[in-house]
Amino acid sequence: MTPDSAPDDTMTEAMAVAYLDQHPDLLLRHPRLLIKMDIPHGRDGVVSLVERQLAMLREQIAQERQRLVCLVERAREYESLSKHLHELTTKLILARSVKHVEDILDMELRIEFGAEAVALLPSPLTDEPQSDPPTHAPKDSRDNVPRTRTTATTGIDKLVELDHCQCGPLTPDQYTELFGGQADHLRSAALIPLRGPKMHGLLAIASRDPDHFTADMGTVALERLADIISAKLIELALAHHD
Image (cartoon, rainbow, N blue to C red):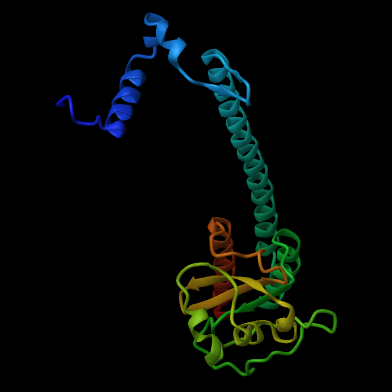
């Protein structure tokens, strides 16, 4: 650097920070530097480096405590979810028909996932022709939840062919195809593919809350649920053949 050249403040600061990072005892060895350091505290006074360090440590501890609280809360939610999945699995084991499976899912998913509409759309599980056409007939007069359908209509063919769980809002037509009379009130949904031999099905659950099922939510529990339901539907199909 020549006498007439201006120092590079950015590089000088970066070098100073790097040096202090590697030599944290510098101010102990050169206490006179403390006299020149400007560490504001409010409007009128200054705070010692020890106080400054304590304040930063308290902030870090508060952040770590918040992280711990979140982890504990997630662990509790996971434990609760695992319990409900176990109970659901036990009930599905005892199911003796697709209709029974649908009834179990309708009740349990409303409780566990806060669903306000549930639809189960398995494709044919056997090579036998299907005698019943697709229908939007309500399960009963209380909630207008459609009964199990044997085939997907053209409007939701792509949804039935999904290869992974999908959460978020649907189009108005998709809500209508899946949930019939409740479509006008639904704002978010979770679509759960069901896969197995000769089976391409879909479990759809929906909520009136647009933030209940979002694109960034985890789907591990939904994928486990899909495995359980798919296995039960395959079991029912094999029993039907026998």
